[in-house]
Length: 169
Image (tube, rainbow, N blue to C red):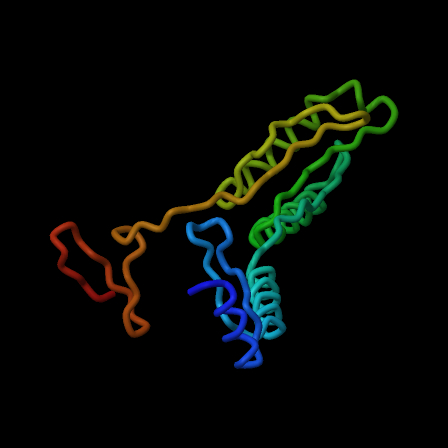
């Protein structure tokens, strides 16, 4: 169809002639209501943005002489942030002469990493930054094996053996 015929057809229907794929050979056009088309496109973009999860970077700061209860509390906070899918920067801040013992901070960071190793991995190793040492922990993506986890049917878990038979638990 020629361009002139397409424009006349669009005017006759009270719609617009919109070029959908300009790079194809020949270019593809559609006869549609352009305002409605733009509205639908913006709704699709908003829906895609809603479903995306942006990974934030939370930060936990502590001192080298932190108490056990305080350390456990910070560890629970790190777990909470990581289960939400965020990265966590764990920092140990020095004051005064504490900076002469960086091994204390590295031990604390290693201990924190071991506390959350089931759900998080070390994204960046401990590094000296100004008056402190910090590392970044990121959520670990786990692959679920059907053989290990089993398949769920009607609220019951069935474990599968290598022959393909299923046993209800």
